[in-house]
Every structure is written in structure tokens, then in C-alpha cells.
Length: 526
Image 1: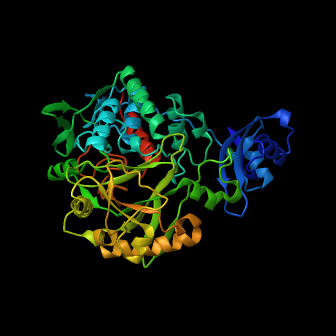
Image 2: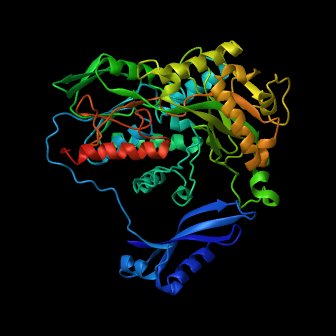
Image 3: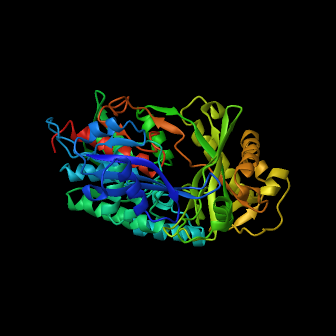
């Protein structure tokens, strides 16, 4: 158990030892009498100066909880150190549990099950991370799409090609467990102390591979190129799943399908699984020069070696609808993220160094079920697909439609690039994005971009580039589950992660995977 001292603010270039000394001083203890370390650190450039803000963890104080309460300081609190140690249940489990999907949710669910002796069987429709990499490169280089193994499908899920951002708003104690697991498997130790940690796509691939190898070493099985095709249930209870013509008996399964498993969603719905529509967002990727983002945020200190590549989060809500930045990738690249033929889909990623010339982020607008209601749970999928196919038609291929921000706002065609060159790997064609999006999307993007320009100077650049469409921000459906996490339709199935509509991003999906695994562990014997 420890004391956590937060909100210590120092100039960004001052040594962190000063933060530790200040934290210990607030606790009225000599530095030599305790053990102290940096717990979290972040950069704050909002007040006209650049500070580094610290939280410090202090050990060696007796009766920590009573001590923290006695100080009566909001910045000093008792912090119990929580470790994930579920107690195995007593009900017999006749067959090994099945985990469908090896994205963040499925990966962490399978990892915990394997660690506790449950020897899970993992089914992944895509390929290993190494083979998947080859399929992605073939698509980006030659325009040959593998619909089963791509940026959306395969080992690591969509998160493997998304910069490895671990920022989350869920404030769950299991987040620390996720970070510790990533570090054990090769992620940089710095992610354990950064307020906005990221691994980088290049390193994350190795981490994912290492975790899969550990699952197998603990007795689990991982079957690639094995798509779930159906479920069998009797009297409302799961008894088997089918994949690639093979029936696998099981009473417990975690479905971590990912947000792009559209065909599987439809198949499961036909077999009795409950789905409901949910909000999501669509828009475009915006690219600026990274140095312009840095100048907007850091001023004269832009480029200082002690400062990270600048990143931002922007949002504006008007008339009941939001426009906001999403998945910002400093020094990153816009990528081709298709999983279906004859569509265009964009996403963003960065490598660990974040040293690319451009910064990119999605600028997206919220879409509600009322915007696409068609009498089924899958109107959102149809809405996404219509945009993706329209973009393909606009360029007559897998190149992405793009437009300079100034031209988009003025409603005129772009003719040549300025300082910013798009990074989308298959190439781009100029196109008026006001014609691509429904009016409510483009109008809200106009409003949002104008507001963002007042908040961040870089957004005033007329030659920033919009590349469209960004449609896969989150799942457009939710696989309905009860409070105990199990499917409302079929007992024994736990819908899990981002595809099931219960997470958004790597960290929250991984946490949901751990919770799903804990539900099985705490009920059944290994």
C-alpha cells in the first residue's frame, strides 16, 4: 500500500528528482526515510508556459490510509496497490473455453485464462502478425486486398496498426495490469508512468506475438485463418461453436470479434444472438506538418529534445451533435484500412519514435441510430459501407479522396498540394468531400474545424489535408449482454471488447477481456 501525491507542477526541463523531493516534503517526511518513485507524468502547455505534471508514489509510511486522511490535502491520498488475482471457482468445466478473436480483448482474455490453467482455444479469422504484415504490405503496394487478413483482421486486431495508444478514460485499476503485461512482453517501461502512454505499431507487433507465444506455452491453442461460422445451443445454453467446418464443444466462450466483423454479426443475429444499434462517428483524417503542431503547442520550445511530439484533443458540440478529434497520431501516417473489396477506409498509426513529417488525426462527427434507422440493428453498418463504397467510386479504385481544408471549407475543388503531402499509402485523388458526406456530417465538420482553428493555431492552415473516409471509429452495434457479462440470448457466451460495443481503444478493450476471463475463472475450475 502506498501514498500517492499528485498535481506536482514543475518546469518541463527540471529534473524529476525535484518532484520526488516536493512530494515527500508535502508528507512531512525526510527523503531518506521513505521510498519514492514517479507514478505518472504528463506535459501541460495550456497556460502559456510548459510544465511537467507529476504524480509520485511513496512507500514506507506506516498506517498509510489514516496518514493520508490526517493531512486533509486533496493532492495526497491513500493508494492501495491492486493486483489481479482471481480465485478459481468450483463448478466443473467439461470442455476448454473458447476465445473468438485475437485483438486486444481476446488476447488479454486468452492470456489470463491460460495463465490460470484453463488452456483456452483461440479462433482468429486472420493470420499471424508476420503473415498479416505481408498481406497489408501487398495491399498498400499493389492494391491486392486479402479480405480475411488485413488491418482489421488478424493477430492483434485493429489495435496492432493504430500506434499502440493506451490512453483511456475508464480509470479502471485493471489498466495497471494491462500496462504491466505489455511491459513484461517487451513494451517500453516508460508506458507505466506516462499519462498518455503509447507503444508504437512497430513495437506492439512484437509484444502481441510474445503474448500469443506465452498463451501457447501455458497450454492454450491459437488457430489462425479460422473464422467463427455458427454457434450451437440447447435450451438457451451454449454447447459448441463451429469454425471452418469443425465443431468445437464448449460451454463457455468469449466473443471478442472486433468492430469490423460485419459478416459474423449478421450470421450470429440470424442464429439468435441479440444485437442493438449504437452511436459511432465518421469523418476524415486531417494531416498537418508535425512541426506546426509542435509550434502551436510549445511555442519557442518546439523541437526541444525533452518535449515529446505534440498531440492534441479537440471537441465541439452544437445542436446536439459532436465534432471531435479522434486517434491523434503524432509523426504518423494515414493508412488504408479496408476489410471489404471495392471500399476505401482510412485510419492512422505511428511508430514508436513518432518522427514522421506529418501529424494526423481523425476529425469525426457523431452519428446516432436515428440517423440511419432501417428497422434492423445493422443500419449503422449499411451507413458505413455506403460511405466506403462511395469513396471507392469517387476515385475509381482504392486511392482515397482528399481535399485541402481551405477548399473544403470554401466548397471548391483542390488543384494542388501546399506544404502538407498526404501519407495514405495507395495514393489520393482530389475530390470535394462535401459531396461525399451527408450534409449533416460535412456541415458539422465545417463548424468543428472553424472552432478548432481558434483553439490551435495549426488548424488555421488552409493547406492541411483531409483524406476520407474514417468510418471505423467504433462498432455500430452492441451485442446485448446482462450485468453478469453473459449474452442476453445464449448463456455461456460473453460478448466482449470493442466489436461487442463495450470498449473503445486498446486499453478499455483489454480491460474488458480481463473482466470476461475473470467471470469464467471465478465460476469454474481450471
